[in-house]
Length: 477
Image 1 (cartoon, rainbow, N blue to C red):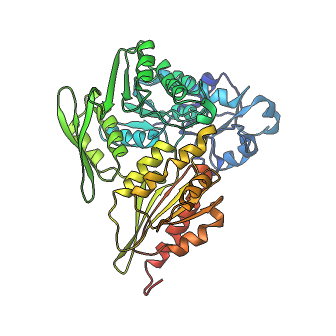
Image 2: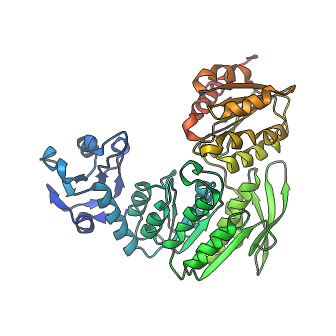
Image 3: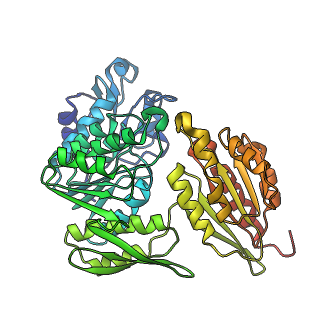
């Protein structure tokens, strides 16, 4: 195994004061003392809920070679191996700068209102089949996540993919200038973070900040299927990016998606490049997943990778946990299909998920929806939630559970109907989870979708646990 850094590189990059340091290497960098690796560097970041300085001792005891700490805590850990800096987060950023400067990898940065993580994972799957590839884990896409992921970049990597997120204007610019990508992808613009940014136009401008760090000789890839596409194109041109590729269903896209076909266990579409046409197949459902696969294919094509092999890799990809993962639980020949899309939600991703559920053929059992609030939508939150009603109706559900303060307005719309759909509402998932479990049985299909703050992952975990245990039992529930 090749070491990530020699300790002298860390000291030089941070300008830190070394104390009780031996001549050793660093194999990984972490901010979490609970799963620290052997020979790691522990970075003591102060967050909203925890201060990493409280866990320095346990991190060293668990195998870390050293801790990067703030100077005001220097006298607290006299005998431990330390690198002392004014601010550990700034120290981490300095390590990230060092990692970027030494790297010869082609760097891809991904942002957008939805689909960032899913697109990143597909791109990673494709590129890693051709060469050593580094990528952000989970959704480590903020002011500490990006420096942590960049500082963990193996100098031998040929490709690296970073996800850039934001809550406010100016944040993506900072991250993009740190990452300095060769390729920048904007997946879409949708009502997310409206509470902070106020309008879709401002969201588009904030996402366009990814171009501020993009190399002038680099490539900007833009999904053209949104009303703010012109803003994205203008900002890319303003940044003097040498090459811009648009993709989507629009006739004027440089790379066009057309002829979508839904089969029993997959979807396919024709992808029309200026110089060729290929058929893209995905092993799951949802037009948005075809779009994500198309973006990954454009990147592979731009990097000169084998397109046929890339298509084969994309065809095998499954959604990740909390992002449309389909979980099958069976007993006595009956399947309970659980779609876990509980990680995040905004109006665009909610509609896309409901489209997937609508296209699933009903079994002998019930179709059940558990939908939680879409957060950070600002003053128009009620309207965005009410507008979900026709998309819900298209899924032809038997039962709809609505969770959260904003979902109350949608529940009231259903109350006024004389519909056969049973609609249940509660402000918190904890108050209604027993009822969800009691309504559910083998033969049903259930989709769970909402913003992370609604904690719908708890009902997903409970369904998986309780019905997995029942798979081995006999008789009726």
